[in-house]
Amino acid sequence: MPRTARKVRVLLLSSPPPPPSPPVMLRRGGVVLLVVVVVLGLLAARCDGKKVSSFVGTYGVNYGRIADNLPPPTEVVKLLRMARIKNVKIYDADHTVLDAFRGSGLNLVIAVTNGEVKDIAASPAKAMDWLNENVQPYYPSTRIVGITVGNEVLGGADAGLAEALIGAVVNIHDALKMLGLATKIELTTPHSEAVFANSYPPSACVFRDDLMVYLKPLLDFFSKTGAPFYVNAYPFLAYMSDPAHIDVNYALFKPNAGIYDAKTRLRYDNMFEAQVDAAYFALEAAGYPEMEVRVAETGWASAGDATEAGADPANARAYNFNLRKRLFLRKGTPYRPGRVAKAYIFALFNENLKPGPTTERHYGLFKPDGSVSIDLGFKGLVPSSSSPSSSIISFKRARERGWMALVQYSATLLSYKTEKADAKR
Image (cartoon, rainbow, N blue to C red; front, side, top):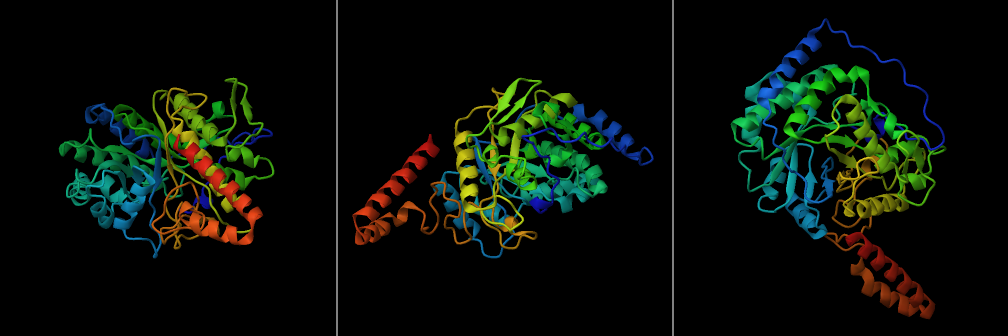
């Protein structure tokens, strides 16, 4: 789904947003409610309560492939190893990717796509077939550590898909349990911020009433399996939706006045942490204070249309560089200081076939040829003009232009090395 089409819940700096509209109650002849009651009655028997760890450290990346010019998966594995990125998430269960990841030691999260959810929800046999096709032939040589069921299902236009989600999750879990993998492969589903009724200030965040008929059984299930709540958090989209009222520095982790939450007396100096804490508050209000929040997607586009405020290389680098430094601190958020923040960056590559506005095709850390797109100190598969591999050539050119150029070159190189060192801390 195009990220710019999602419903963005903005964290304003000036004043809170207007009160949300009265909740819309779903009425479907009692069928949905009956299904929920039946499912809730089965949850305790189907969950073993053992938590699975599917994330090493704090930093991961989404490997999207809506493109016709990307490197083969075997080369992508080399790139990930060079960048020392150990956590990778894909949006399907492509066999060429699963084959390429064999023996790599990289953690891989695969996905049941939205198009597969309804069939799997309707048939436990379909769930077992899916695992027999996409997990059994590869695990454990391919380190499949997680499966996501659907992506941003709730809050979308397909009510039938939302109704089917819990059934698909339960059927996949039961099949994993039959294979002895339920405690080895984590199962969850990522949500957009459209599941929240409001998010300003963070302490006021709650889930939408009209979605609780679907969220309640999901959250009950995941609270028993120990799975995290996955949310796609994009300060970039919030800023782009209202640049007149949001300080871009607040979105980029740069010095700014921040926001103050009067209820908790907590101050937030960046939107990323405010969005994560908003999810924690929503979970607490719904009765799940112990559930971990993990960011399934976050990123900043390096190019965009004239109407897409903030989409440029400098902001994309600032957000990704500062977020990476923030994650490497291995600390929590203002409201959950003991819960280390973890996030998957969107995305590994620019994807040239993604539909929608220009931003959709420019989230990548790398260009399709494997060179660096957003310079964070990573090495690419091929040299980039902004990478250290071009240092000797740059030095020769600077020397030819005279001593002033040499001074400027030295200052630039020193700044680059300093930032790279900071990123490794």
